[in-house]
Length: 245
Image 1 (cartoon, rainbow, N blue to C red):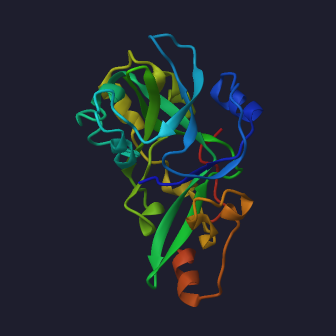
Image 2: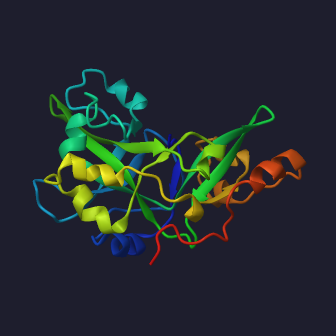
């Protein structure tokens, strides 16, 4: 799954990375959680022009009567999103890119949940695969999104069996284009390679959604040999880039 992520890159960096003018006001976000407004890149009405927007994280389908459904639809399984009633319309023609600099996952060690931060080295933004939808009733309009997940690669399996889908830059146009056939999107619903995954432990400061500063990403070590052995199985920040240039 993907329950927290970070986006600390500035608008200029994101504009260059995603080939669009990111005009929305952005502040560094170190601990983005469900229900927050998040940046997404999409296209509309079969035009190729990319549009940066802010969407609420937690998809509310256009047909929903109960808005609380969004709290249960923060993630969509890549294997079933094309057929699930909550996601199939969005998967067909309302796909988006969700910029991120990294994401968090938790592992249970000695009965305690240890958070980890996963990112690329150097710390460049990348795109999570997302879906969006518009809900509107009696003049009230809400635009929401969900993050697609897939089976974790071998590096991530120490932490969790699922991880977010990451869209490769050369596939941005195809992913965003509503005209792209669904079978062609299947090649995008994969994790990045294990050898390019960078993971390190951080303190439980990140567990509190009210905490949103650089301390969420500071590497953590408590000197516990059991924890050190567990962490030794994980790639370090000396690994290669997530995306080869």
